[in-house]
Length: 171
Image 1 (tube, rainbow, N blue to C red):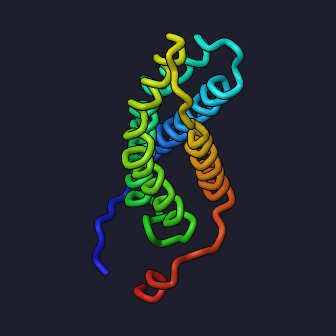
Image 2: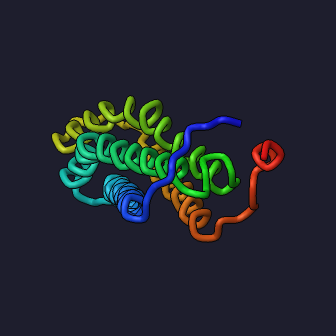
């Protein structure tokens, strides 16, 4: 089986791994920020602050989150192709790759399209003209993402399941 692969020397492997860990940490941090802003929007008592939380979500969440996710994806690909772990050689790596792709897709396909409405609701809320808008679905982005990123972190540490069958047979 021919595949694209190369060997990262020790210095580049470390640089790539550090960048990977930092981008994953940033992604988790952004998700925590999203959870805090959603909580302030839901449970805050001051409508101006609640409106500000929704406007902040709409303005500052999608692109930093997507950027950290794509950096994590790119460095994960480099590490997979340039180390003994491979991209599809071990189940834990393949699952992490799939989770990263899923989350990046959800950011673009589900989260980003709704942010204009969230920002508009925040402006209306702060201005005292907000209609009753259901923002209960805002619970799901940080809940899903933080859960998924926690699973990916555990997989990176524990490295369960061993090799994938298809590549074990090909060797």
